[in-house]
Image 1 (cartoon, rainbow, N blue to C red):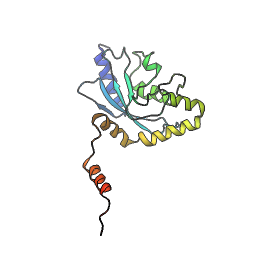
Image 2: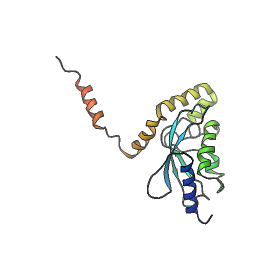
Image 3: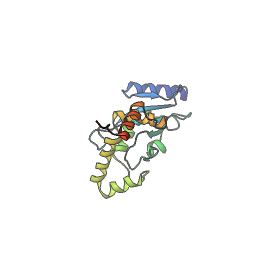
Image 4: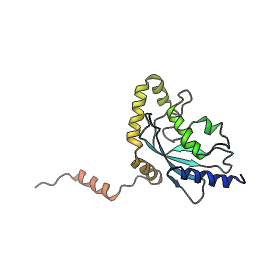
Length: 183
């Protein structure tokens, strides 16, 4: 491999060719979003997340930064920031890994086998250890509420604007305040 930038291009192209929807954030190849589906036969099945990926200048020698944009209920994902606590990304990364590994192996493994003893979301970890059935129910509720295709688009808009009302929402809220006219 001749340079980190060529490797970055190659890995990104390989990810795009692997049927992942990738959306570049700016003109460079260092920041982008990837649509990620929850693994089958898990409480996350049917969920769709927008993952923000940032590649450091030293990629592939330094690991990518990975974060969930829309909410997910998981012991190893910070509920507010979406940061991921995953040893293979944070500590044991190797240049032998690539972006496809992140989305086909590392993130599915994280969702299938959470580690409640090293939590970023203490509430999720405690619930998982105390009542696995209630934990899985909460995961499914979050999937229904925050991880649908429309949420992936909404998550991007939410991060980029200050919740401005569209004309339709504005008009409907006026009607609700005014009530129905007397005949």
